[in-house]
Image: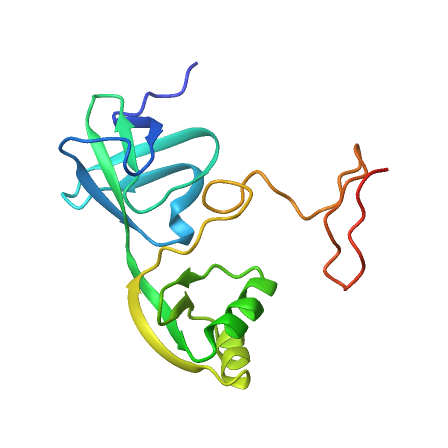
Length: 175
């Protein structure tokens, strides 16, 4: 006996921001909710669809999902709890990056997710930290779209390749 078919439209095609045009419904998602392989989503107008991809995707503000019925749904960054960080931005950004924390970089401030441990660390570094609620669109990873999907810091057993072990040891390249 086969499973019942979903009556919901399905999205299996992703168009990156700036590569699509035309009318679209909108779907606001937090930073964490924009990373998935398969998920039921609801647009602002109230109807739902299923987004299903072969691999996990990291959606960005302005991307569009193409539905099986031809409609487009634009992804929007939803407001969420963040910390506005000001002070010695270069030094602070180094510490945030050293913890692999997502960070939205702007000319006069950094935005990071509102997490107590991060807030305490930033305050101890002399940063001015202010809680806000706003859309979060952090920088993408250097080695992949969005969240560095194509890059791993873990040791690769087949090639013996690793970048670093995060404990101050030198990186090892090759077998």
